[in-house]
Length: 498
Ligand SMILES: Cc1cc2nc3c(=O)[nH]c(=O)nc-3n(C[C@H](O)[C@H](O)[C@H](O)COP(=O)(O)OP(=O)(O)OC[C@H]3O[C@@H](n4cnc5c(N)ncnc54)[C@H](O)[C@@H]3O)c2cc1C
Image 1 (cartoon, rainbow, N blue to C red):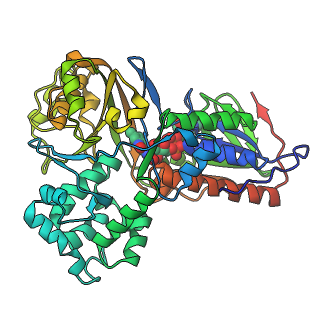
Image 2: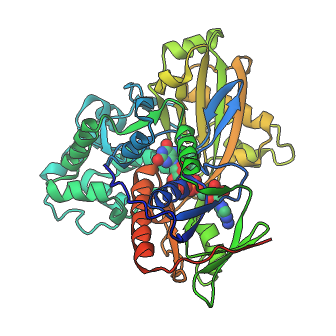
Image 3: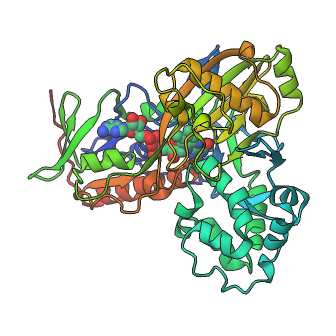
């Protein structure tokens, strides 16, 4: 269990910490600091909490259009969820596996069991042979026979996979998985950022054995990912309620625009309507806003990949939807990227620049992934509805949907869903749909400049995306900060000037 912080004497003046950013990271930091007895104010620019966790009402159904699950690795998310009293809300996805669909011709094969990032744990297994073809599977199976030095000097995931298992594993499995899951090409994923894979490699002789080891440890943890019955926004709601109970002041619709050291010690925050002084500041933000707040003009602009999520709620009573539900392609599919840039006719955004409501019939699948939400999380969605979620936009390839009006975006999503699932998904079955644009961070090559004393930075630009990395990092930061403030700070008197 996470150690219960000792609450200091509440009658004594308490240090004041300002947490900027009301996503999961900021909420976790704020809660832990308040539990340690500190006075905490959380500032959120938007009028809602959650950041990249967001639920939207679609045809009367609460649909998650941001993060939908958490990785079990490390156990930190489940531990937090349990502390918040949500342990009985944890649900495992249906064990249906997922599929891999070729963008070019719609060919679909089940995704082989993998340990990490699509690296096959059994290269000669039936699913791997189907995905890779016999030559590709045989090449991959040589990996355990290769000397350890092969690929030892690799810097990126792509270099390692190519050296040890061959180009087909990279192109047909690893690239679709990393682009589909984190919108990042394996050529841009440093091995140094993959702690679990590195640890498994250090203990095993081959990449195949490392993948198998990771697969076994995920199975031991109850599966690689888990969800919550109320969706990941239930985590945000529970964190917000806990912060409220602990006396955290939450200021919504309050963007912080500057943080500057005060001559008398402490820090001044500006933005919204008032100036606030605090003993310490935590910036729990994406890299771009952090650079803006620190006026870090020296560095290259923050990197991120624009993506768009489209959620479709379908009428389960519609004959086409009944057919879809009867023969699903697992819990969804990843789409292998076209080998070369899509031809003009397959890029609806550029093929119809004059009218954003016209979509040309695409030859290739444009979506990068589809989650069959109602198959993946049967306990969450319930009956009478079938829910699909498509995502668009890969690294270096902005979402084609961005330039489309709602009508054309829906039409494209239905075309893509039909091809990915191998069965028609007609417009007449749609009860409602929602679109949500996002920015996916690219792990920072050059983190923001050193922050002023008392300002602490955290975000998935440094930890890597996802709650399994962010939540333990947020808790460690809160613990370090609480300890240092209780030891060294003379609490700053709160001043707030309208
Ligand atoms: C489509 C999608 C699907 C994903 N799926 C998963 C998944 O299944 N599992 C998983 O683990 N991860 C997933 N992720 C990643 C995960 O959502 C993020 O890593 C995580 O939510 C980041 O949380 P955060 O609090 O650090 O940042 P954010 O959620 O971005 O929160 C930052 C907050 O700061 C606020 N803010 C910005 N500037 C200011 C300012 N100047 N002043 C005040 N407030 C400000 C923003 O409004 C925002 O609310 C997904 C991400 C996306 C986009």
